[in-house]
Amino acid sequence: MGNRRNFIRKSTLATFSALIGTDIVFGDKLNANYSPLFMEENDPQTLFGKHEEMTTLNDRPWNIEAKAHLLDDLVTPEDRMFIRNNGIIPKGIKVDDWTLTIEGESAKTTKSYTLNDLKTKFKSYTYQLTLECGGNGRSEFNPPAKGNQWTIGAVSCANWTGVRLRDLLEDVGVKDDAVYVGYYGRDKHLSGDSNKVVISRGVPIAKAMQDETLVAFQMNGKDIPLAHGYPLRLVAGGFPASASGKWIDRLTIRNIVHDGPKMTGTAYRVPCEAVAPGTEVPEDKMCIIESMPVKSLVTYPKSGALVKVGDEVEVRGHAWAGELRVGEMHVSIDFGSTWQKVKLDNPKNRLAWQQWSGKVKLPKKGYYEIWAKATDSQGKSQPMVVPGWNPKGYLNNACHRIAVKAV
Image (tube, rainbow, N blue to C red; front, side, top):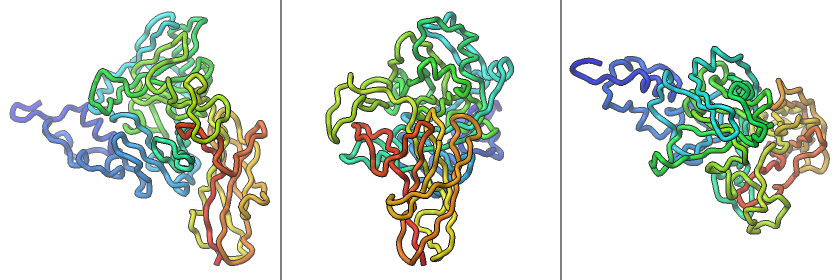
């Protein structure tokens, strides 16, 4: 720190760099009272390095989704990964001071770990894991459901590296009465009240003990981007992405179902039994969402594409089924009247999505829709219409469709 100017702290500079995904050249010369111009921008390309075709649903908090054709990669790159926030992204992160504390009434002891502890004292694992917002597809429900009007792009499947949550829990010690593990993060409440917790969800103890449930510090081989939870987040693939808390600094081992914000009431819950659209459902008749339903996307061709009559048209995409595998994949060009089986690849590991591919031939000029339908390993298929109306518009896994024109 100079005697004429207060230069910006290295920790703050690192946060700024993480936010935009690149170094700030001459950043060491920034005055502590100066905010870089990009901080005044309201553009996710500038702030988060997102692809120009990503769709911003709102910016307070930030909620951004991809279009189907942007998700064609086997491993989702950072610039095409959806953002789902409930509060304000934390600033001024001091990585050297960051700790993760594990405690709770069902913990045999309380322990805190630095990031260096996690990286050096425990074995690291990498898994490709599907994360999908529980409200993905909400925009199709009728009557409309309140909340972000996601279409199809609140899903991703990146490579995550970190420590198995199970290894940390075993290091702390888990009592026999353990039921749930809840998380707490450092995102800020929209009200600005530092005493209010934004979101504190979690997973049942059985999910916490799965090999693939990670306390992650890397995404796609690099530090997790700030908007996606830097420097530490929980990743529980197959469950709604809200179970994968970002910016975590505390985990609590509970002897009850965790009761933090967004765990009670109707949040991330659906009626335990089917109800008619528009029905008011009592809280005690709502069940917590766990494994996500079978679903798929057409990622190629892009909706609106022009194709040549008589040519074989390559189609491809991804399919996933929460805690299960996808067993079969079909496509239709006649609005679901007939279905054609297509090739389905194995997942890279459990809880990763599976690529599918095939070819269709459009017999004459005109408008067509290519529909995709996945069937999970227990024989349950995607519905052709929006399923199971629920008050919050969760779990829409209706067949994805794209429009093409044969010329």
